[in-house]
Image 1 (cartoon, one colour):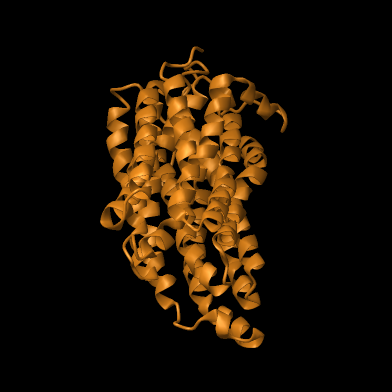
Image 2: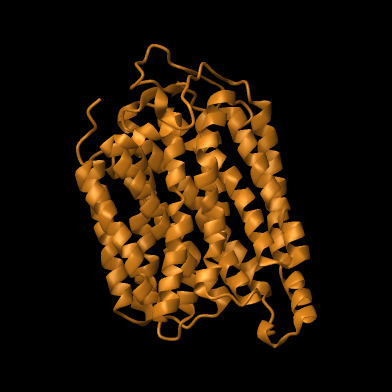
Amino acid sequence: MANISGTIDENQSDEGQHIDAPELRLFVMALFFIFGGITSLNDVIIPKLKDLFTLNYGQAMLVQSAFFAAYFVISIPGAALVKKIGYMRGAVAGLLTMMAGCLLFIPASKSATFSVFLMALFILASGVTIVQVVANPLISLLGPPKTAHSRLTFAQAFNSLGTTIFPYFGSIVILGSLATIDPKTLDAAALAAYRMAETQVVVKAYLGLAIALLIVAGVVWMNRNRLKGEKHEESSFFKSFDLLKQKRFGFGAACIFLYVGAEVAIGSFIVNYLMQSHILGLSEQAAGKHIPLYWGGALVGRFIGSYFLRIFSPGKILASVGTGAIALILISANSTGVVAGYSLLAIGLMNSIMFPTIFSLACEGLGKRAADGSGIICVAIVGGAIIPPLTGVAADMTHSIALALTIPAICYALIAAYGYYARKPAIA
């Protein structure tokens, strides 16, 4: 990433504008890897905090609410910031904000208070949001518009690489330290001390991430002036939302909401689902080590999908994988043992091409309003803050995670419908 450079091809039309910067792709792939990995660590933190703070499923899912609420609050301001200071400086701002969020885990541990952990996660996610506002439109510009679906899917594969690697090592570091003490048996003083001691492993993990983020931000800052000629259409905060009047974009934004919510809800329940005696009956750490299979399925699927999206209609492929996700939920919810466990994990394969395909289908033809479109899409990622808690409440009410999976299934049904709706290219 040391020699990032590039210029915007001014001879292209707004619809065909792209950046001639091959080296820049490595930088963007690194961004996808980083924010994907950090986001997936929530799946490891949830069972940790659930045990330490004796939370029910609905309360534990507030981890995802705090994290993904940042997309709702920060996405549009983040898009405005990127348009003002450019992609490279915007990426630096996002990386430094992520670092600040990681450092906030120190006071969160010292206070041993769940709400302070939620605040740290919100700040961390604010940085992730800004980085994602940069990365999505930038990768779309790194080549001809006709291959944008394939290129964004390939970049998302690096996102999946992060989501596959981070949870495995996170399970070893974070879940492996859980003591055998039952927090319910401790008095107030002993409980506070226990929580402070047990959360130290979380602090150490995020301190390591803070150092890595600082290094990456430094490299990007040294290359902040390398990208020349980028243009963004000026628009007000509220004007960005007029894009929702376009049916294709509006429906696509709604599907991003549904997709992120469904994917995050399933990922959040993997540990507790696989620990059930009628599923796999695993220990907490062993179940946590299965999370990479879920995200790894998305990794494999994105590499495969980047090829098939060049051959077949992206909309039809989206409809197919949405239907496949529903089928896997039905199989898992109506079976036990290995079939139930691994069919749930296999949903990751179906998820693989959903985000990049929905994003590129929705944003076809936006031209100079790409940053605005990316900002709105990132706002829609707030689905990760809403659908997981709803699924958690459903699990608490029905005393069944399997029944609660009905909510993600409904989300996938609507996504499949959008794929069919957007099966033909947008008319400019």
